[in-house]
Length: 143
Image (cartoon, rainbow, N blue to C red):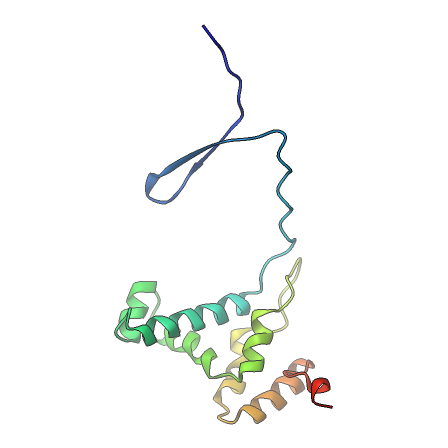
């Protein structure tokens, strides 16, 4: 009888699917995950963009179907989708906010609602900078 000792990694994925992988001791260790958590507003902005894509491609017919599929109320879906009305520079800033290690984030979805109601992107940028103290576009490249 031959006995082989091998370290295995066993992962149980969605729907009960099991993955078994051999662990190579000579292989370099995985790089560490960044510390902290992604701000909620960054995740919501990414979801808003994703949901908009689902609507544009016809994967879902309307926001009612999308809300049902994502198990949220229709008003909540409208709040999330409203983030798509922000100026592109603000959307980009929200997507790339630094990770949080402790405390509450400075920018929340609720705090952006007044900015979202403004139709002009220039007004949105001005109010965003006024409220949060960060420029929503880099003007140094234009000089």
